[in-house]
Amino acid sequence: MNVLVTGATGAIGGELVPRLVAGGHAVRAFARDPARVTARGLDGVVRGDAVTGAGLAEALDGIDVAYFLIHSMEAAPTGGGFAHRDRRAAAEFADAARAAGVRRIVYLGGLLPPR
Image (cartoon, rainbow, N blue to C red; front, side, top):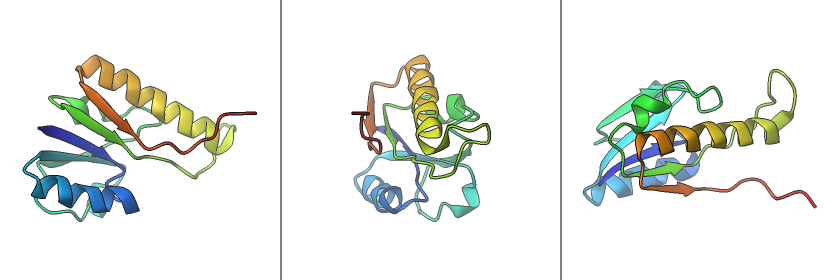
């Protein structure tokens, strides 16, 4: 299976990538700074930013399953804070995955719904 892992430099992505590779999957990573991706055996690393959508089309090309493990803790430059950036990144990713024909997205949730 062709798998994309976003957040490959984080705690969960860093543990997941080697297991997917060991399981025989073709794994591609997506990162703002590809030099920080330390996993071995990847089919490639695509530079990008989920908040702006940069690089998503390239990263998702030919992918069957995409892991969305991104949760930016930075404040949005235009305001809105973490929740705004998190929702924007998830929406950009979902739109790009749909356009690429990705069959399944595995989403690591980070936000609680408003009460």
